[in-house]
Length: 420
Ligand code: GDP
Image 1 (tube, helix red, strand yellow):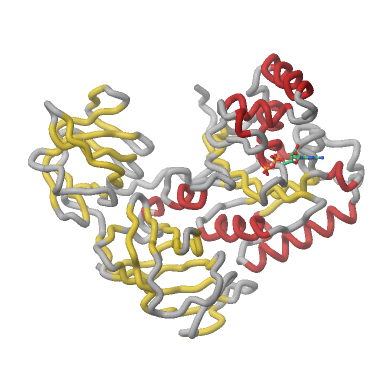
Image 2 (cartoon, rainbow, N blue to C red):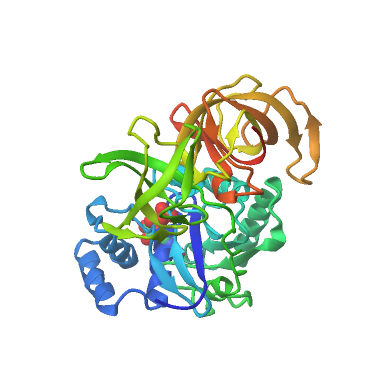
């Protein structure tokens, strides 16, 4: 479509702080939504006594989820600025956001953090900033939003900026990699045009800040890694594993290996969008067929890679993680479920090796007895069943995980090293 570089952008922040409205505003200001669609929904919103909801309604309409009312699906929307083609990746508020973000389906390069000026730093602000940090978001644009609600008060703005900076320091996010903008998504202040309502602010608008984001790192030249989502039996073809290629390429004739199931063979056919293709690349969702592989030989959670560079299977691995929320404390021996790519495996935190000091990034304590919400730590993990996972320094796409227990995501992290 366009030859400008692409960015995956996460829009994060506490519920109701204005994420959807901001995305609607960005789509609108960049001309990504036709004017007549906006008009139509303005009328509709006013009819329903929800004047001012027009952007939200636009988003709703695009997602065909209007019936859901206030919660709007802003994921996967695209807009172009002068410098970049942006795709909004899964946004928090969506049930599986944390999992999706981690399992690679929607790895973001940079993020916009929306913080409502009248509410300030709230629990999900904290949670999402922890996540962004752990998952290696490069730069953060902080929109201090709903400035109209606080009468464009510079003092309120400064207080929120100071609170967010404290939070960033706590999670070792370099505050120099964050920019701050007073906005109203609703009124459009400082989104594409400098606002007259904030004469005390002479920094960038949101669009300018988006344009000055660094160019995302090019995809790694890592070998093929294709986490298996499902395995089908299709008459006339046989066993067809399906999944999304994270790194490398898949070609017919390749010799591949599935780990940890530890089987392999030659790729006979590859299918994408119901058509046979000779090869497929990162981002492609494929179904394929491998000579000699039966339905019960492989399963969801396996990773397919080249036979001569097979996916790594961890006996144990060392990881850095951030505890987002846990009702009590985490000690050695704790065995929650780890979600990595398409795998879900119970893993024991065998030892807590180091606790990090969030303000300095230095080791605060060697071999602590426990860690709790808000702590960052280096831990050694032993999967209870074979798990294919990679060091994030080798293959970042396969090197992060979410830790879930009691129906919620309690921690997120990345793999430092794997002991095979
Ligand atoms: P999300 O949950 O973070 O996606 O928040 P929404 O975008 O759904 O916004 C929540 C509510 O705040 C809605 O009623 C919006 O109309 C309102 N809102 C969002 N941004 C602004 C703003 O800048 N100013 C004002 N006054 N209201 C806003």
